[in-house]
Amino acid sequence: MRQSFFYHRLMRAGMLIVGLLSFHAAAGQTLLSEYRPGVTPEGAVYFLPKTALRVSVLVEKTTYTPGDFAPYAQRYLRMADVSQDPSTSFRVADIVVTPCPVPDTTKVYAVKFDARTVASRMTLSDDGRLLALNVEDAGDAETPAFFIPAPRQEEVNPRQFMGQEILSCGSTAKMAEMTAQEIYDLRDNRTLLIKGQADFMPQDGRQMELMLSQLDRQDRALTSLFVGTTRRDTTEHVLWVIPSALDSLASTRQILFRLSQMKGLVEADDLSGAPFYYSIDDITQLPAPEEEGKRGKKVKSAPGIYVNVPGRLRFTLYDGIKPILTQEHPAPQFGQTMLLGGSLFNKRYTTRLLLDPLTGAMLRLDADEPK
Image (tube, rainbow, N blue to C red; front, side, top):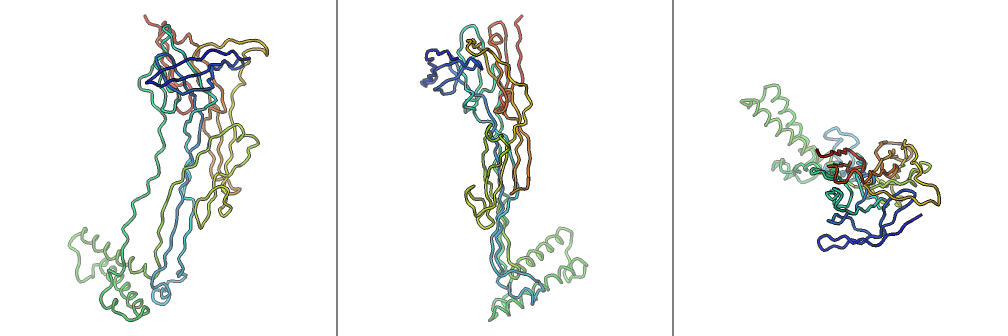
């Protein structure tokens, strides 16, 4: 049964917060039909959080470009199975799942301040979630950092290591033959340098390292004309899953994304990609909430602050039918709420309340009676 109250107006920085307060007899929750979270000298409107899962999918793109001398790799360098066709492929390099708090619009509450309470020093997050009460250093949950790819190595033009004799050849076959001979000469010089039999030996270890590095650089560049080049680029795709009770029913699987080896990550309804599914299981083990009143009997709603008693969920990710990742996380949407009575916040006590920014659960509650 519901008891309706008049509109309460909350003013801050010229912003009018109008809320129709209604008390639910079964749960004793103060809900608003129209709201804008914030704190004013007169009162506050706040959310409790629920868990959203941030799924970061790292997709690696591999691009193969055949070398100019690919048809001659077997003849001059004895390299078999060198492809002469360009190709592009994609694969999932890594998947990282991070729980993040978001406002639960089904758990929005209003508090009206008066001179007899000390509840006016409320700390809210930017999106209106309650973080603390009478606590100076209350912080929000850390935002996951975005993926930063490694710096790309400078691409080397192999023709800068070709002498005039090679560049002036009249046919590709002859250029390939002379380039292969240059590669063999580089490898012979490297072997002589390591054995200490080179005509010009380095004076110290540092000079030795530089000479070997330069020989390896030239070898790789010229060899790429035969075996081609492979370039790998990794990109991050961030997907969001907000678990609900419907997701946990019968542990049904839902498509999170699809991966095409030719196009990369595609939409869930794009059948060109192989599906990656996820399932949500409610693994909460909490006692059922006690009934606060019998049906048809009015129950008075006590003033105070609501906090979460979070449940837990199990998130499973599948590559087709094969499970590849399973994690458990706290989930306030699968738990309960608890009312901290208004007697804790009267002038007789100095009350400090700190909530877990991820779950909205109580981390610390101090109520000191002044001497």
